[in-house]
Image 1 (cartoon, rainbow, N blue to C red):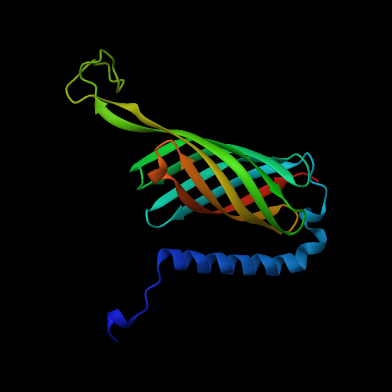
Image 2 (cartoon, rainbow, N blue to C red):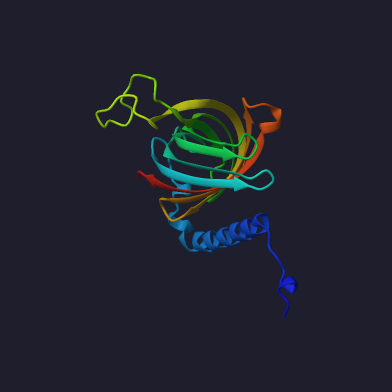
Length: 204
């Protein structure tokens, strides 16, 4: 069989199929665990830790974040964490912090809407042979080839988001969401990111 007869699956199609499989798996788990799911309990005052990864094609972009969240009540959560964003739109990697709020319905399969902000910076390596500082801590100042890392750019964005939480058991939560970043890099650098996350809740 010729290699060109093998159907090719794009990254977007592959990601979509993975999401469907994950949702089906967690829905199956939910059916067996729904009687004890945390979604049916009062979550006010509880919280936990989360991690999310995301990306997109055309232009390529990816993101990641890790942080903590807390329930103000059964519907409203606040979250904050460390994050990174990279995109072909601005050809750079930014690391920084993110924070946001999400409003969700109280059910095991929980749609939500949210709003968040991101602030980060990128670095570049520059020559440091004439800055009067021992940048590499080897006891020599302004040696030949000495370099330093400096902040090259700052990125701020605000992003509305929409998604769904899926509870599996008492303390595990899967999140699938889309975020539209409106950035300080200009209208041409605004973009969607599609995210997958896992959270562990601590509390009663």
